[in-house]
Length: 563
Image (cartoon, rainbow, N blue to C red; front, side, top):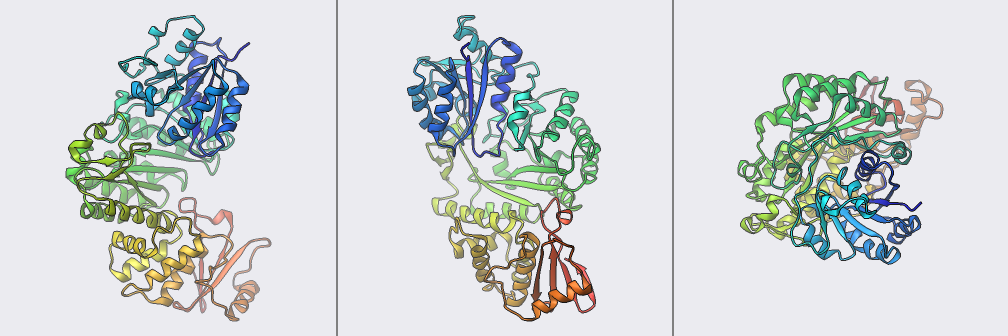
């Protein structure tokens, strides 16, 4: 019997197990159980010809592709090859990249025959049945066919969609990042985002959410990432699920599994913070989108934020050290020039999060800001990901500088490898965080693809030029960072000093000061600025589950303490 459809999604990386094709498959199983459908997972990095051959071998009646900004470029190259190999198959597209401009997308992608706009769990099986002559295409909600001159309204379902977590899904997951949806829609209408166009928030049942949390936690995945756009918009529901995750640690949730939630930080109440502060270290990650701290910018993008409360809540979440906190800023938003962005960056950095992600505005098709691009003087790339190249407040040179700051922040801060060094250098030099990263960006250039050893040398050379920074003490902090974050204990050439006392120190430690366990890897180094010996054992049980760093012991005379 011929396959009715193959559902293909090109993920950005293998580690990302896209949920969309499995949602479509679940829809077919629920609403047209007699149809034969198969999911084909691939990535944008896999040779496109191999993906096309896989689809050709299945000989489906229809091929469906999930379209996003990260894969539309690859799909434009893949579709002609699929059409050549499967000349009689119907090619149908869906996803946010085409849902809000289907007529234009069909004109730009001549190999495609149809686009399903909006949610697909119900429309997709109806479309497949129509292909078989078991219904009319006019009855398929959200369907746009080649030659149509008007775009349909993207379909938004009213019922709870069927669960995508089939036996085939778990067999294919293979320990990759697992994605979980416990609600759909967003309560906000941010001008740069499409989530607010998916209707009001629809919450799935709590019992389903809990059951799927446990199923994914037990699947072999180390990270379960919730895709709810604002997980805590319903406070009572969020608190119940956080309590559930915490209560199930070591029971239904195996050790080492972490749940990632996207939240609005300013709407957290006292009880929510208390619950989160009690979570076992490493069990929960929080991603908090700030985007900007500049009031005119927040107003322009419809982002209502109590900035003072947001900052206070983030500090309180960071303080216990049990949660990995990720915060976001977006460069290129209306009214925010370099001076205003610098203030937003410094405010965000000083909150002490583990990751400060500096992103750049992308004018997504269907977003309000794209429609107002001319009004705001926003110039952007015409091909995905549609990144802003110039605004009325930031020119090309300033955006290039911000890309350099982003690269420096990724290597120095977000990597977790230079934490002690940054604290020392910022304290000694008196520079603001933005100025420090800006200076390194200018000194090091792009530094793309530079090894960790080479980047350490670049950073060291720059930091040594700053006022108040003592070279020996700077080396101490860099060495401590290296020992704590890079298992193996090998120092890069810029930090290594040949010293016969090091071998004697290692023997002294083993003889009684701190014997090494059999088979345990150890790193040691002499700190000349501190006049101390640093040592670390790379015991997996001692690694901090939040920062990923190992504790380093310092030996100064008869004193031993952890740093």
